[in-house]
Image 1 (spheres, rainbow over the protein chains, first blue to last red):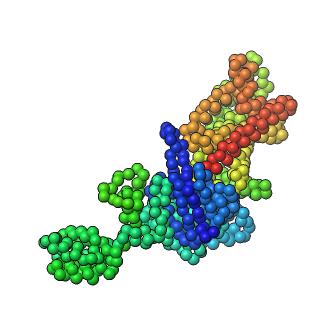
Image 2 (image 1 turned 135 degrees about the vertical axis):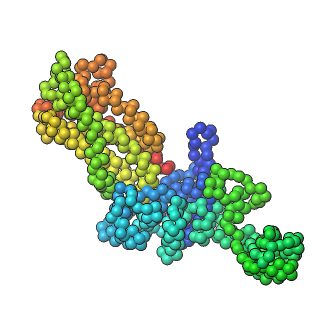
Image 3 (image 1 turned 120 degrees about the vertical axis):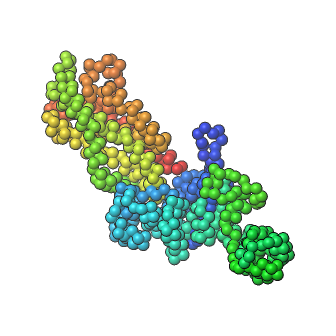
Length: 335
Length: 259
């Protein structure tokens, strides 16, 4: 058993009031999360990410399919799985009428921790998440970022081997988000935890996850590392800023399309953009071609394709935070 | 089993702690019954003079068990609100993804209701005493009234939790409250002796668990309670409480299986 988390052909339907047919939340979803990495489940709201997490964390049962954590069947032995996993759900879950420390102690007690070991662990987590000073204050008084840190601390109290993070940075300000990213990266790095992260932020998935699965309509549409996924788009984007505006675009266009390395050439007033399998290697040729055409470049950038493009290519839709409700098919987007 | 007891203890501790932190919540919830107690006690003082009313003490004495029963019922009928809040806040799910005993989670809500109801009932008894009511039944009588109020509180608390878990709607809980509260209150001997009610009301009153509490209270607060009648009614309340808690536990289990 090499995977920390595995889901195989998960199907889950819900009855919806006023609708005759049941709504399919999951439609044969497969994932395999290798141990010790951050695995990102990326997709718009309603794609099936949260349902997947609920099934994997024993909160919901699929109509069909199998799920396991560290080789243990979630459906058959939920109790055993619960001891091994930490869960930080979308909604806080911390008790606002208890202090940060009380929240942690209760959580530890529920995981069977007792006496000084639970107190030491709680103090350790409070310290680590910068909550020591606020430990005696009611969680209600915490800022959004502090509350989120307390949530993560709650999920870690019993030293789980797999941590589920469901939209961990939704609603956080940029500073708190950056801090949370750093912390998540550290957990998988230094502590060797397996992290399954769901997010609808492309940037978050790109930054954190070493493996990704893009989920759409209850299925995984593509899976791989962010670089692999972007690599599948064939090529980097090379963009050059010219020193002077272009008087005759056809000259520049002709010079660039003549290069064997260049594809999808696009010429604007003083910017040219093209795609190339190996962007860095194409740069000298592009610069030389521009020079020959009489429009020397002032600067040039090479960018890997972004996950936005991966998303667009795989789902056929522009990525928006609410792709579910905003299903505008993009003209010309191809699979 | 040991784990269930331990988890019940920890989870109850959490709720009690929250109660202790906000004592004004409990205190405020007694304001309304206190107003009933003194307004009705004064306004209908002469009710006991109605021929056929047959009551030895003052109308305030008469009213106390009714107000205790009413408070126990109305306070606990909001329990479902707390349940909905815990569901919405994600707290319940946090417990459910932990190995915490499922039964322990439900036990804690019942224990919280019991503690809250006990405190409120004692406050009402003390207020009554300050207002001039007398309890010839003594501490023992008061203790039995507390037990009866806990039982009826557990009945309606479980009902409210069940509605909260099934419908997840605050409006539904308010609906259940208004549907039951006033009719059950007035179709009991809380304010008026049952023998002075129309026949159909008497028939309902004798099957009304709220009325059982009132009758238990009125009996145990006298100098010579009818213990066998008290025991029968307490048994009825206990049986009803067991059924209601069982229904709420079943609802909870089905909720927990498929969040």
